[in-house]
Length: 66
Image (cartoon, rainbow, N blue to C red):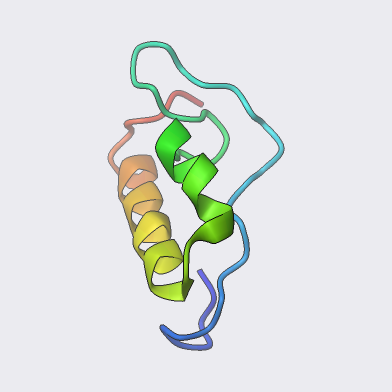
């Protein structure tokens, strides 16, 4: 996540491994849902930070297959 503060626009978490796991509905590369992926480009900084926080939690708890 961008450490410049909550108002800074974070970079996309896309890793280029764009594959949705059928069991979880999450991208295997970035841990976003399809809704989060499509919302990313129109989301403001606050929503992008919220999406990143959810992705980090999913990755930390093993909700995404490697």
